[in-house]
Length: 143
Image 1 (tube, rainbow, N blue to C red):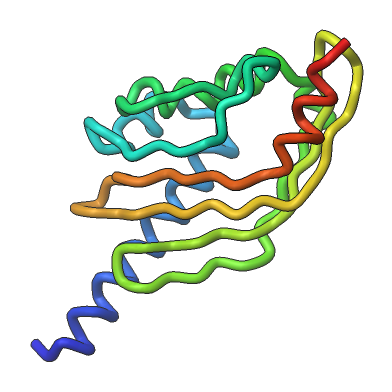
Image 2 (image 1 turned 90 degrees about the vertical axis):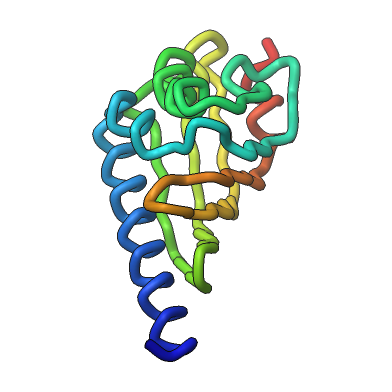
């Protein structure tokens, strides 16, 4: 197998895992997400003490629980996320898009672009770095 063929096969496997991740997130399947995340995950999301679902995480179960926590603290009917771009290079993928929602406790909305960097190794997500409009989300969480 050539290096180019190996790289393409790796990228295809990464793309398939990213598609599975998106489907599981959309379904709110924390059990499926727990299985998809590696036992230890390099998780990065800028900490913000006023946003209850943004906190450090490192285990598969903690990472998967984030979707449940977001749902608990936001109005599900107002949640929107669109992925405009998916770039895959070997084991790395970058997703870019927009997200919006309403915080249940305050009734305030947030919106903005996001970029998500995922790394997939052995069919499991080992890195999850999310860059989003944390200022808008924090403002929506503040009474």
